[in-house]
Image 1 (cartoon, rainbow, N blue to C red):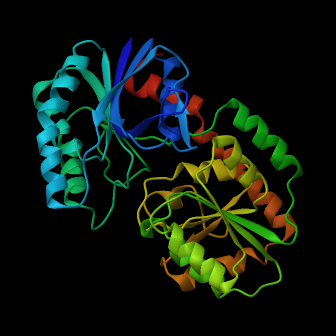
Image 2: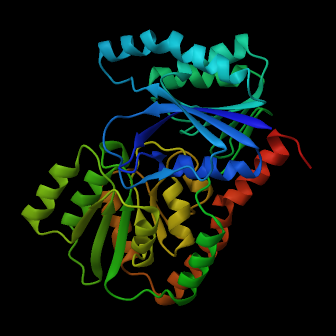
Image 3: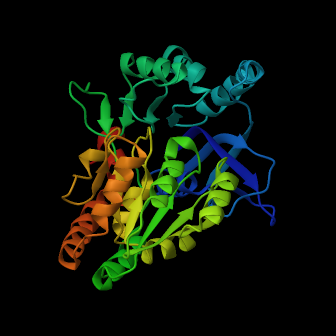
Length: 373
């Protein structure tokens, strides 16, 4: 069988001349070769320098078909999306004729026209992956439009979380990010990991307002506690320079690493006791499952389906409301955690993180989408 994946995932040409793409998506597609003989990925090619978080494809059986990078918030950006629409549809139509299944990853700018195109003009087998918050309030209009279309059509849509009155074609899927080696390494780390002062924290994600990193830094400014060690911040974004200046001005115990490779991120998880995210809107961040696998207790927002996996004061801490005061309160609770409680929670979370393996994800695709026994 041959699969075409259509997404907004950014790709780059690295210094060796290889095509590399955003690591989490590329690695997920690499594992889909366990189900499909060939895969074509239609996605965006960015002409800027490849970040350390980008990964290569594992096989020549995966072909990358580039699209021009368009999109943005301005009126001219929206016009450029429309200008590219005929070209994108031609490419998608050509590849669809050469493949057996499609996966369209949404929400995305081109989803506004590709979802109706696939509904109205294609009989190809396939499914839609909605990676965002399926129950997001005050979502962008394009996201609302895409969700409405996906609810009305008959093909399978994989979503984050389980919801009341969920239609039969809306199937709950966990976001995968762990392989067999990750599980083995995680088990080794969990076996010896203890909580001892100082307590260390990590943030892994984009440095923007939606991820809540600015509020986290502000909360840490208010904490004077003997057990607090360091917040390790992995990621890049528009707030990097502002946050670095704030950390320097107030001499805060925060270290910035920028974008790191998967192995480098693992070393951050290994030396951290907690992973903290204060997102305003998410699907289910892959880094929560990763942190759980390596013994980091989640301190996370109560948004989307996150509280379906993280129960407050049972295996993590839920930030609600998403304010500086609430983040501070949860940090203070974590700083009083006992060694017994920490050990109990990280073992519980390690078992739970098996849901975020590629094996679990592929088995779901095999049984629920491809209908293969």
